[in-house]
Image (cartoon, rainbow, N blue to C red; front, side, top):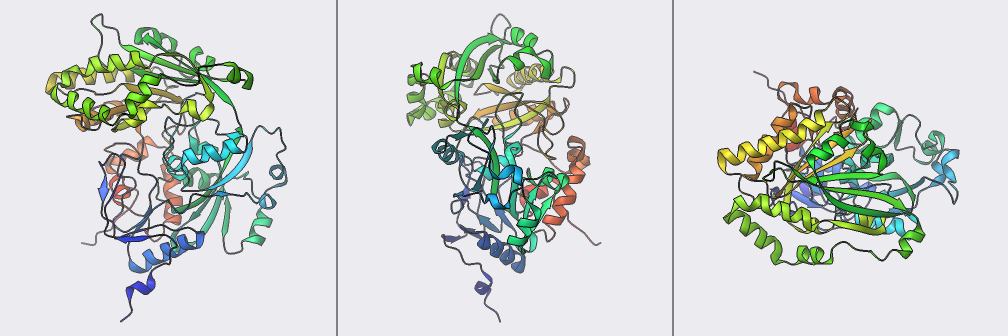
Length: 512
């Protein structure tokens, strides 16, 4: 009888068995068969072969900042810690027009391993005089994690971070290695095949549009080539307003002057009206500035008091305790938080400004729903629907939002399973303090209500999507394209997971 251990791949990093893995907030946890930390492409191939030979699943996890079950597996869990390197891009494999960008190029290509965190990517880019064109409000996720779930920033001229990808190297079923690009991809096909005859270069729009937002279901990502820009600086301003005023400013959707005026524009609002009926909003605008403006501007930080308070260990404990004992004070606390976040001027390196700062230190979870802003006034109705649902749940069960609600604006993308596929989108983030009583109940109510307005939930945040009644097909017109590529890259089903079964990506058979 053969020893099962002989089938196991060899790893440079640690291997643990039946050890608990949990996400950052602790609302998702699992005890996988094994947790492994590969460091090379060949080790990823061995892991897939091992899983297939033993008839178990394998799934790569990021840094644990997804609040949905997207990263869970009951098989082999691949940790990102061993794949965090900056890779020197082999320009001899690129098409001629991409080999030498020049010192003044507006776009530069860089290659990194999938497990590098956004914070580390930013540091590496800054050291080379480069920067991401845009990013989300947090920098603790892995590069593969933000790309695979279509994470985003705010700015109607910018798509999700997956739009920065120019090439994706992934280990699929049977240990096959694919380099996947769009039809006009950056790689010289003849040069690549001569150098790597054991790998497959696929330059096809359908393949690329499917694989780049693969939600962990296409394979194990090894590396990504990203398009970045020269280092730049940003000025941020935060001011208070009201929804009645902001509504008028956003009435034209993607063509709204306020979205065109600022490179980056977002809102945070209190879903509970004041006594005069107005909804309070915090408007955040961000604009690139010249290096000389940065050097001569003394406002290099946001509110020091807010930042220190958020980092103080007792702060989240006291907030949670207050909300649990007296949930009815939540509207007041949200109002005070909006006022405390007002800041007339903050200038710094771009990635430090895009990072929202203090709020990231408070334990929380959220759902996020994207609503089209180029289909009439659906995005405006969405805000009013949220206010109505919040009032209804307060009346029915004394359930309250414990945080403000964020609105961000993102350009349409081609990626098949991106929330922004096919149309410019207003992303609505519904944030809850970790111990909010009835928080999941309230998020579910919002999710269901926003489906009526063509809402699509963020894969990495709390959602209740299922594969029933053709729901995913209705949400995503190109789901068929995505599933066709998925069936090829996951031909053995080795990348199936509780998540993929819940939403219907994985199929099962029953012979009766």
